[in-house]
Length: 362
Image 1 (cartoon, one colour):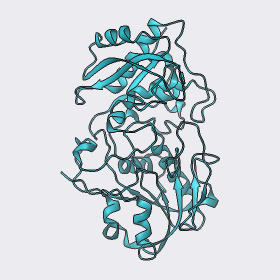
Image 2: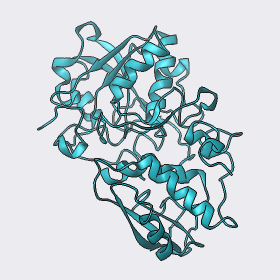
Image 3: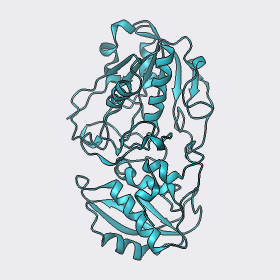
Image 4: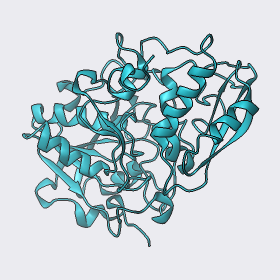
């Protein structure tokens, strides 16, 4: 089955009432057609015919995907060929202020999400919709598949008291929604005055993973190199709230994990004995080039997902943390704030979307 994206059919899908509009576009490196043409190039082809392209916007990690780690802000600049502004929505502003939207009629959003609440691109969409509702700017969302399927949900729904930039609206950790479905939900539940159009896909079915669609995988962020990474992220991202390496600084972030104080052979053996479904833990050793334990030898494991239909990434992440916390009580630590613009709560709590004691009672 070959899924067709709206960016490949923009000429026929663009609403007649928006012809001639001044358009800004929120994009990132994975904003590509099925033939790997970047959406900015597709929009440029229609510039002057369907609309007037006036600005670009970029989320966390940059319009070009240039910033490697979390909490690295980037500054806007002028597009070198088109001479239009590229505004940063991960720096001084995460919600576009009025001056960024001034003169725009439409803000088009074409972002590849990965189906997990912590991934910040959906919250950039959320804040864009909030700002556009206030400014009277029409939001057009280009639909894209949920790469880890649109059926399976897992993890707790966000407690609103724990809102942060890794969770601004009540969703489960693994939410099983497409970005277009999320946009509709945000309008219905948070921004009823936002004018919204979702441009549809063709031939996508909810049970599909991205490798069922015929579409290419392009890294939506520097530490999301493969679909296999996305498959484990809903659980392994929890390690960002600890002093355990989640594999940043290696070629397999989130698939490998460990610390300088961990016995890899023992860890793999004991985690395999838990009977977690659809996963095998292989002992592993690594030296991160940056981030936690940079250049130190770490012992740990690599997750090999043996059956993604039954694999439970969130439960797997909880089990890993519980095991290491119990095995190494003198070394394990919760990472202190700040984390993704939250300066008071523990990072693990904003990731979990609730009190840490609910998941890790002492």
